[in-house]
Image (cartoon, rainbow, N blue to C red; front, side, top):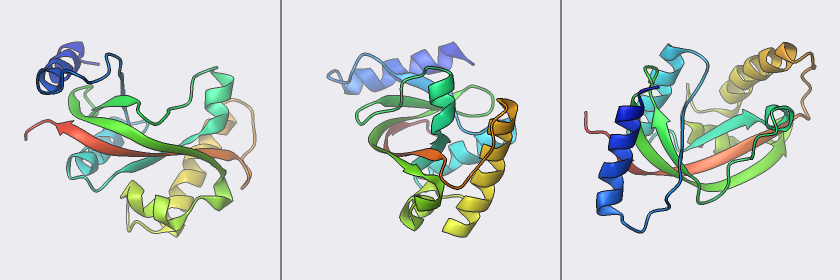
Length: 154
């Protein structure tokens, strides 16, 4: 992670938004450099305005869930800051109840619920296998929506 680019982006944003919260989290999408880069570009194009994650991992790692108002610095696959986004809503729903609208807002593939389910089932199965748990269609999924507040000029 390139802390210089994260800090610089944050300082640039705060100059024009002095009332912005003081705290943020910095992270990238996916588990490979290639996926992180692809999804960061979708965020920059404002095609991707939602994400989903495995609730069980938050529980196991005793991590706080994202929440409305959370400021996120989105990183690319090299750990470079590309955008600042604010979480606008978070909902935990069973895998088989994730809405087609959410899948569309994630902006990936053909943006269909079928595509979303195929990709996320594969991801969640691997994540759960890594912690000796089994996937099922009722596992809780953290569905997060966000809006881009600031982005790197490319």
